Figure (cartoon, rainbow, N blue to C red):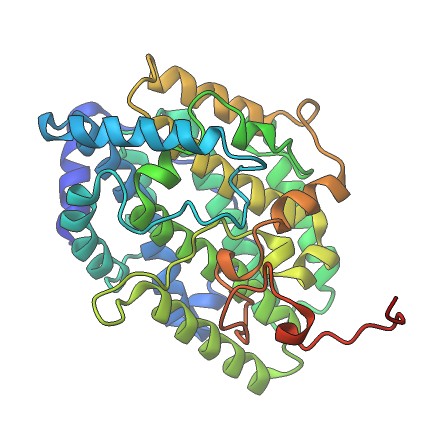
Length: 373
């Protein structure tokens, strides 16, 4: 058993059990059987998320963290005054050396090693349930979202499921059947992410840790996009191999650097436009889960949150609310695409070696159909 799991389960046995909530996949086991490496990475990514939350809490509670807290507050204040700044932005305020760089430097090698460890589904559920950094309702919502993502991949990997659209719709309705533990299948207001009192703390305070979690989120939605684009088994195997290779490039250091990590939150319209087009409700669910994780990270990272558990519970309530704080589709697209595809990890199957933002037509090889004036 991985030492991180052992430590969490020890604390779990002391604190008492919290029953995980799972979504029954309609086509279970196909991913594990056909693409075990993908299943391994996705399982490890959930353990990584729990570990990152714990590392943030440890950093905040350390007596050595005061200098980092001061730097964090200064950077957040500077960012809040920048024109048009929000999470999805092309501005260059993101540096891989954050205010808590000493803590990140200590934690990162172990987290990188964790990504390559093997965790079965029961271990993942146990780790999430045992996580003491976030309240039980958040654990249950994230676990239900994890199971929904697995269900979508299994549907598209199962050649026996001929009507993929109907199967995804049925899975979505099953997911939404528990109102309190499902996030909205509609776009939520960007203000929930960008304008809450503690926004930016996760991204600015822990750029390497946030980047590692975003790389894992990229993997999930890129794999979904690959399954939809593949026309046959050979194309699918090639596409998944490409996605896995791109993911490994992001999480493995190049010349001692982690600059291959995403610097923005991967979203469905940017990374998986076909999934978004074919299954918008399911895509919004996965995006809302990703955004909720970032808000939770903000609330754990910011030094001035008076009651973290209550604040996280309120954030969960905002994202599971199906009526309030909703956004129009076009405004949501404008928001999530503002930072560009490259910053969110790049296209699912690659082909974008540098940011497409703020580049001229000659650089992008764009040919205008309109006459010059």
